[in-house]
Length: 181
Image (cartoon, rainbow, N blue to C red):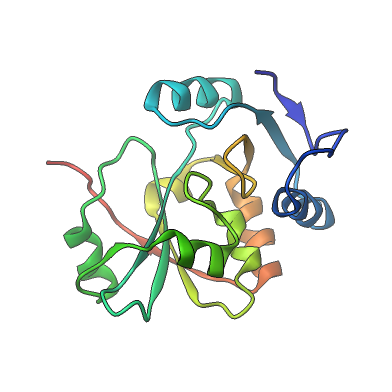
């Protein structure tokens, strides 16, 4: 794996959702670094990607309430454990569960394994509430997928919060997750 600055020179074979991510970041003047890789389906593979990027990729969870009337994208450090009870009380939403792949595709134009804050650019009706753990906000850099699971990005957290989110019309709610047993 190599680290590249910016978008791929050759976009052949890449999905439109990935290219739209690069288009958006470039239009906003957000500097980013990229590495291409096989889908990371275990922690060992994720650790290798993190090492190449020099940042821990966020754990991104696409959640919904039991009635499937509210959807949430939770960004948290990859090494924290997720407990629904801990989050439910902060956002006043009982019975949180993982949303299904169809809803992920419908709202974020993302498939399982590639969930990312970048998918919010596809949520034109702002139906997904972004939740960010405070530890993610404290990091200088942020790692995420460009809406596909075969590439990963590194960019400044400040750029994501101050440029990307306002440009796509999304805000976020800061949450505090302990993530311990």
